[in-house]
Image 1 (tube, rainbow, N blue to C red):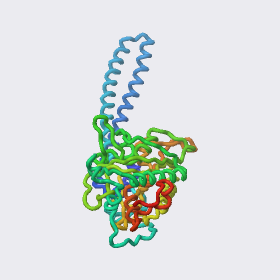
Image 2: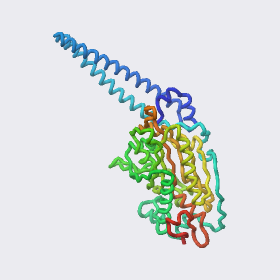
Image 3: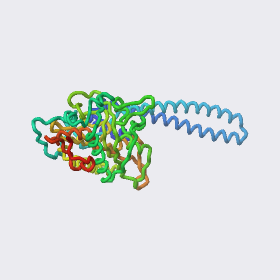
Image 4: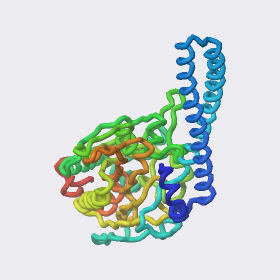
Length: 424
């Protein structure tokens, strides 16, 4: 959530940056927020003035009683009762105004970093790095959904029977490949200094609000009304919320966590060839890295996270590219995001497998996550997270790119986890 102070001091800049994210009615929304905040401050001042008047009268009552002037004291007590009623009305009004203010503030997305360019969709993103050779597969190469059926390693129809579309069942070597990737990603994170967390798979509304999924992504999350809980769309949500309403010490930073979890997304409105097979699922596995940083260090931390994810894809032997997202393709909460895509040779297209983002103080302000700097002053931290990595499209690319007449070769880095080197 953006800070009121930022809107007041840099209103024109905020409006300009919001427009870069293609946020509609940016000027009107910012002006509405500032007007509501002015009303809040005026109402607060009136309440404070009445409270001060009440304190002054209380002292006078005490003086009158000491002098035995009971009638004068009783008159002032009547006035005090009236003041208390007025203060109560102002307090109720202030609560309503603060709710209006909060309801408006949560609609504003994070401001994009100064390096972000204008754009409306993925076609406008910047390719900042690409490496690896595109496999030259034979003409009869198969897409991963056919390979899954051929080797009986992922059963989409069985998942559809048990639950529904988008909930595949992994079998035999397919299940072991999944587990191998999870172990590989977790151990790589631990080796890089991240502390492993095993988070809950459900969160309350406060957690969804803290990281910005609510109210922005309310319709995309699986919700259980009886318990008022949400299935997590990513481990980012529970792990980052560990630090909600926490004041950290400077010596505690940076905090680096890595977590494996199932992820659950309704993916409402998704259709067509891009959702076939493992390309888009309602339930999938992912390893996530989360960092809590001092503001001055967060962009160096982002570069480290990008390098970490690059090393994972590189060790798997997959051709990949890194895109810096344009304003119109960025998430609600992000200040700067790099997307990783791997090339799927059988589908002949790039598949997104990771997003690595710096949220600056946006999530921290919503969560009230702060730290005391060396001077003892309390300030907001910066939060970052990245997929390291999401499994479905990694599996799709591994199956397609490594297919041979003898079977699907397993990358060498995974063989100590799978205990086999080919799927046949």
